Image (tube, rainbow, N blue to C red):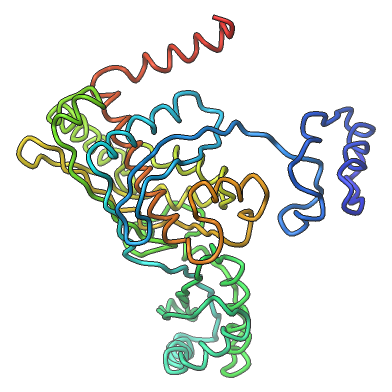
Length: 384
């Protein structure tokens, strides 16, 4: 088969090329809300756009340090019952007065590996990095006006040094920013001290991979959520009693322990993927961001709910956030542009906990499978 030719920035020419060479035409995908020249930094070999159904749930009340108010949240998904599930949990939270939200940490790290000739040289190199942290900050600052090198943690493994550079990235998700800055630091360090070579990435940061490190260090925004649901709210809006909810949550906790799960939650990934697609986030970061904790306990007769999400890698500038539909979704949340990334993280975290409540209640009272059965019947009989 012929290789796909890169034909300027003209997606219609690529679609015609594919029709000739692959026998397939992209008719529906030809419709896009953006001009080809506007996405040159987002994608290669552009042929069009994939349209994902967009729904809205809410409002959810958030009593955060950065998000204070009621918000309608966009979800881009093809999974029936997902939006309805989050709607139920978000309403319960709002009826109870809202979710408290706190950003506990805000950083992104990358860990290059430096290769020396011996353990002794590796130890000396590690010490040099620590001794010259201020100088390395200046080197990083030459590449970005928004990122800042906040810290360094170097570990020696034989003749290799794994150096974890920790950055703040402002309102950008920041991955490209950090990659460029640390590459400049690596080149500077090798020139100054010597060494065989360096690898910019080596899996230590576990970006877009599930790993234990994601449990205990912030990667992106670390957000804590808590609130108390009065027993009457639980029964009226979730259809179970607080004790019935706790019985199911305890069972889920045991299941997660036996599975060796990283974190403890029911389905953070569901809401994350839908919100990330809608709002122009890096969807692969769902792997990291879904490693978090949600739990509950009784306070008298009421349900105290709490959660920690240590890996919300989100941004409100750069990347896909400026594309037309994604920008509209961020604007719905009043999270478009500078100064809004932490606000966005708090809204996302509170929304995810709403989804936890709703799915736990549905599994506790047996409605879970009925909702999916009804949705399948609608697919089989669309005019019913």
